[in-house]
Length: 380
Ligand code: TV1
Ligand code: CA
Ligand code: ZN
Image (tube, rainbow, N blue to C red):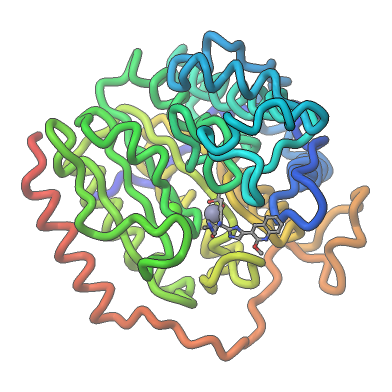
């Protein structure tokens, strides 16, 4: 029932702003915006710009960010700096800022404007019919809430992009392959039947953010329009592809989305500093290839990813998939060559790390059955 693989005429809008990589969350913090610069450098050195429309995207305006976030929270983000933070102590706890995960760093709101600006631009390229596929690796910050920062995320570019797509498309599918649960996006559309949110994540009741069990299925009109695929440690390429393809085939057939937003967090890769999955760059990219094969307007955004050489490898590989342009495994000369040794390859094989996949076939089949059951109730 899956359409044939897409033809090569797909237009790809690659949305980027060089400034996005120039922010620092602070010493020792795992979130490193320079990974965006590293990714862009690899994409360019592979020559992928020849196969895409490259857009230097503008910052989002306050009014655009206010389509989801509250005015008082935006005002706070605009005003607070590392130097004046002492005047804002009362607000830090209200908005969940200033503690380790969500520090106040220099240019915090500028960073938010860049991340949101890129995802809004990507969405608009799809709604205007100017492109079939769009990319914003500086987006994907799926934990942010209306008036609250969470898990390294301050503003939710994905929710803004989904709202933009909803102006034109009756139904939008959100797919999240970051190792963490996409709680902020799920919550924003929890009572809506126009955005179906599907997150694959590690789930054991403790792993951040702690939500994402199979029984979070939505509420009111949105009941049956939130799907969660809770996974266990060290899932490998085969198991991940197995569950991902089965779930998404069922979802797309039932929900018939007009557009898809895919959050491609790379903390689901083997060897991530925070993640505990065991997926290769190739396996991660297969998920993008699979969603693209449905020939539905698709935008990919970034997200987590804390072993930055692998983040940039993976998003470069996924850019090549979007652009339908195979690229050699040997990395081109680039300004950051020292990051990629000793192999200097795009898809370094996962060395047999003896990590046992805790997701048995029986467990995955059980998930499949339970998800098929939820989808049976979805009004179509
Ligand atoms: C500063 C310095 C902050 C070192 C945070 C790992 C750090 C973490 C740090 C860290 C860290 C988390 C929690 C516990 C909630 C806390 C972009 C009660 C070595 C999308 C966000 C994970 C993931 C947050 C974001 C998590 C994304 N893990 N070192 N913090 N508390 N927070 O567990 O989904 O990838 O770890
Ligand atoms: Ca996820
Ligand atoms: Zn994550």
